[in-house]
Length: 309
Image (cartoon, helix red, strand yellow):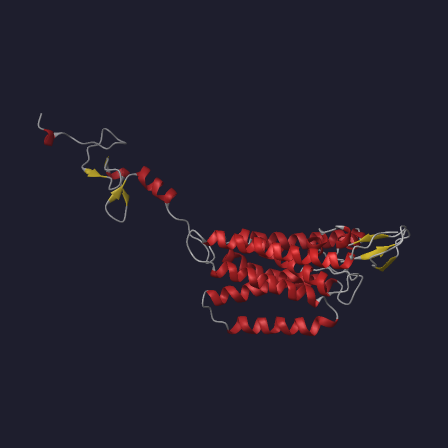
């Protein structure tokens, strides 16, 4: 038989005669199996394989595209739930707020921390190895029955978190956004530890929120956006930092702003390509080390080698 007269059939439908080949695998395909391709047609299997191997879209900093700000919603809900828990159990604030060091007598009275103290007293705060306070304090807020602001404290932080989170999270991706939020909160606590009265209790998501604001500014500069509205927002935020310094923790605000801004800069300007993720991870690790060393040095200064009597 003449080879040129051999009938060719579709590899998926042997009963159907066809003369078109898949441009990728070169198997014959019938009209039902043809899929449009940039050049010619492809078979269904090659189309699926191409979709699996296609490069997925990424954010400006290399994160996965996330159209729904899930982390923002989760953080918002967590803050509100913790606030409700505070209303039921007010002692949670004392146990998990940011405190550098203070003394507590057997009756629960609190005193200024001293490196040398009587045996009936106990210490609480970071000097007592309660390091978790540095993060747990970022999810606590002033009780609605106490303080200058009451419930306004939570409301203001959550409004800003809601507005900024829905913009910043899609630009970073969920993982990078969550890391920036937590490290901004940690940065605020460290500056609180270093510069504030060690016995002063501090609570609030403000440090983390200020970190998001810094990221909002850095990322919009990175993409070349119109900076008019962004600059006005940042000017208002910095003005609030100064004005509120007399009755809020300016240390927490400034610490969050600096930590969030530094990390956002590392995210946004890391070299593209295979090294980008490594550089960003290295920046996160470097910031953690810097904050940990700073806190450890401060605690060492406060303890001063003192021992209980």
